[in-house]
Length: 186
Image (cartoon, rainbow, N blue to C red; front, side):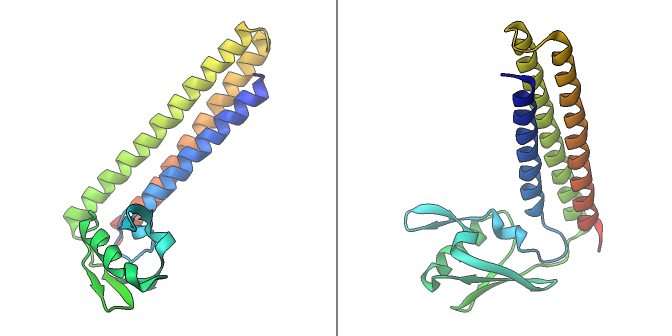
């Protein structure tokens, strides 16, 4: 494996980590209704767990309400059960055509818990990024031992990996700070 292959692999893996963080942060509740809250919800339908977004369209017509329109009305009951069983703490209202979720304002205590969860997610992402850096450095060392790259090239690759690490850790910080601000705003 040459230096460019190692760097490409590292960058792709770090990018996936950031995408995962974005997805996880979208699922954190703020004081406003956000379709991202229910995106990761799995619904037990036809004997298997299916992501909600494959079963219904989700919208937020106003800041306090999420509306879920099932593509197949027969799945409404299953969607309702999945919401009740989730840790969202939202009470679904099913009128037979759509499910409405009223998103109450967050208490100070709940906001603190959400900020704590955001910080956990950020740390998990940063640890994953550092593990990817470690793997990349090992690959660079191995490539140098295998004589596919020179010692100078190995050092250059390691420096680029460190630059990627700083860049992606910074992105994780920026994303989580923005989400934290959303949660703490009233």
